Length: 279
Image (cartoon, rainbow, N blue to C red; front, side, top):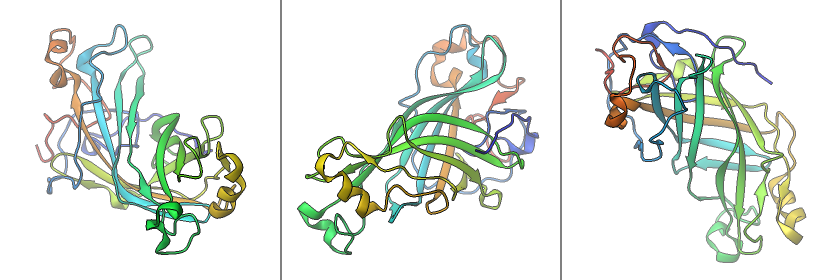
């Protein structure tokens, strides 16, 4: 398993990608802005409360969007065509003073699996042979740096498999035996937008467990998906985007409680709208 370390980044790197680092970043100028990111961001899932004793002036709500990419799990190659969004609170632990990230919510949509139940191209649109999947959060979210100094993240997932014959509890992986991603950022892909930053994150070392909750068709589901699948036979390449807002902007009532000023303090990883690239 890759290990992540805390590190303070230079101001010019404020901020870095969604699944990048729970580091403290000094405010400063960013590269010149391009166009808006090609995804939509929402802060509707940002909680209106923080840990007891937290200073709202030192907290940000991040909206992370997986806007595309591919996942190869066993014998299934899935192109992501619908966005997956994640909401994360980032700030200082009021007790220890360390940077922490609190995972709030994942939102995802069903994707059609090419080849359907039989793995035959073109059959995925036939009702009984249709096969869909939906990615779900299963824990272990972290932001950090790899031992080599690059950006990285961990996240555990399970994938719901949807077909009328499989029932409503069929998954690849489970909360106790999930797909465990250890993503590394492609530094060359880092791009600044006028409302976000983006980067491609990859993992080719994760293992994929077998299915659970598929009833009498569990063996068939495993055979179709080529599961379980050992490390080195699976791959994830995800295009991620990050946009952030300070808590004092999201919830003005919290501004009066802030003990510090975002213009002078170092903030957790994120992209407050008040900090514009090129400013």
